Length: 324
Image 1 (cartoon, one colour):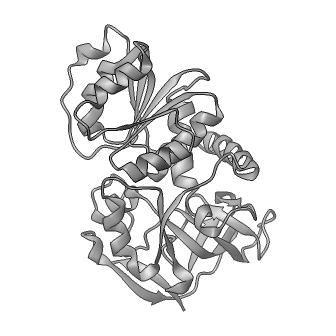
Image 2 (image 1 turned 90 degrees about the vertical axis):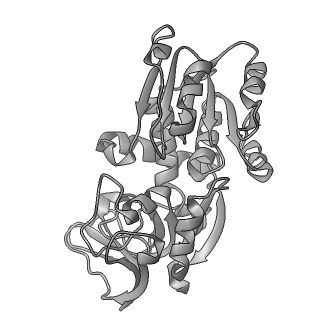
């Protein structure tokens, strides 16, 4: 038997209950990973609440991000052995558990340089940031990118990725501690987006040269302002939104702006392979360094879901199932 969080019905964080289930067995081309750390993402909360477009069959174990050690391999698995350190992509079973099941091409080698907690902060945040910047946003060296809400795990990953490609990076955050963290990742400028005058400060900062690309974590609040500060041909990639917003479409016309959304679930397999190859290189040489804000027990999953949705997040929250 193993310990796992189970959700019997969609609802508030309290619907997640710590229980015991049968240990997992791999089918052909599958591996079982002994989960040492499970990452908590905002999308986990939307799925748990039943408000996300993709709903798992009930009951289910939450969690996409995870890292650990392979404990069993199924027939036909050639690239992995028991004892290999890995982080995961799309799990067959959720990662809020002491074990998770993966198809063998959905796990990736975890460098000895990285802790399991950091391994659990790679797949969703870095893959989302990479795809937003370079596949959807078409970011180019020398351009200026505004990361609107840069203190969370996706925002911090985006700062590191953008700086590695020679972009000028402006990040925003609502807390002084969060802004310091963004600056420590290499952002050229950091602004307090809760200040009334921050858009004026932003215009002064770029000296009349508008923003080429915006990664938007809260489009229902910021999208109208984004269109005003973008350069000709500028792009907004919507990563997060918590409601509706009204904009004037004419704002996109004169400067021929592009608004596009991103959902990591829609990433084609070939694109995902490119992303993971790039991330592996950066993780190995230390260019990319996942930031962990908290490590909690598996029993604290409900608390983690409450905290990950609070403003001013500062990196990744991870659960440690083996200590449950």
